[in-house]
Length: 380
Ligand SMILES: Cc1cc2nc3c(=O)[nH]c(=O)nc-3n(C[C@H](O)[C@H](O)[C@H](O)COP(=O)(O)OP(=O)(O)OC[C@H]3O[C@@H](n4cnc5c(N)ncnc54)[C@H](O)[C@@H]3O)c2cc1C
Image (tube, rainbow, N blue to C red; front, side):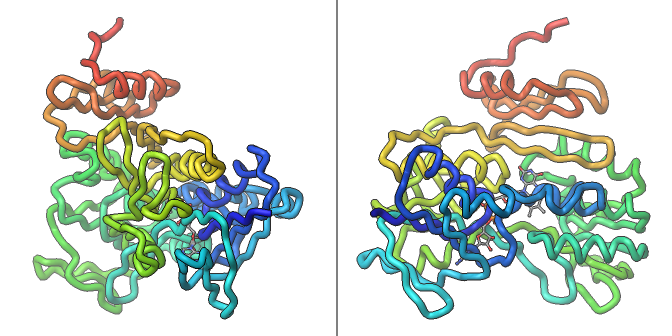
């Protein structure tokens, strides 16, 4: 009987295990996760769960009994410490080894940290610690105006904290959205009382605050570092798999070894739609990439060519973003101040779109991106 091992029990790993069973695989499925929790979704950790609005049980991918029902051997609190590609074995941190016929790596990413006492946000425990910290009120300084930083800022404000966000770029989300749309997020946060310090870097996290590059000290009771995440590639690299920014795969999510696959945040996969490899740290990529890798492991023909998709909720702004703005030369916005669709174009072709407080348009936007066509005239 064949054994398929999945390293990394997050969303991509859990969805891959589910797909193996749904597709009729009757061999052994082993899902190994370093965390003690069974697979869960991370988006609520910086939104409803952090704000105390969603129940703990709702964050999990599957109910607890599901794994036994599906005969999935879920090993929690276990870290894979090595992969022997030729022997088709993984080494576990309890000293044992396990053979596999096919291996899927879904080890995700880990938050970048800063020296000093700064909170990061990746796990349920991180979210619970932050929630407790925000509940105490006081002064919160958030380093980084990316998605995690901004969502944490919104949660801290809503908990009644004084919030300052420090960001070296001239607008929030500058690298992902560019200055035009970054400004929209800046305005939303300012309107809700967040003190945005843009174009300024944080030099040092000190015991009672943050020292800025300008020499100014921002006193803080709690500091959050929202300074990005790094893919967990060390296992793959040490095993001898090809690694770039993430684990390199083809469009079928196969790595440089024919029996090893990668998906989710850790994978840098060739996307035929873009004609290059992309590493996408978004929920939908874990949700769809895990199943695509599973089908590929089963020998099905897979071409993983999805348009990257992301969503966020911050204060009264809910939005969905599709595509990739790299190399854009024009932004067109249609709608009103907080109810609009923005399109990014390169040489007249739509490459990305963002709907803000406008719903049920993602399929249309993604179709436009896929078509590689121009933006049609507005409809009245
Ligand atoms: C707070 C937060 C909010 C987010 N909000 C959004 C959002 O609103 N919208 C959106 O699109 N995306 C969001 N994301 C991103 C999204 O959650 C990730 O893209 C997604 O979780 C990636 O899933 P994954 O399964 O690839 O990796 P992960 O969820 O990182 O899971 C990987 C798992 O592998 C385990 N692991 C690592 N190494 C080993 C090892 N050697 N042995 C065993 N186990 C190992 C890790 O402990 C981890 O549990 C958010 C992320 C965070 C952290």
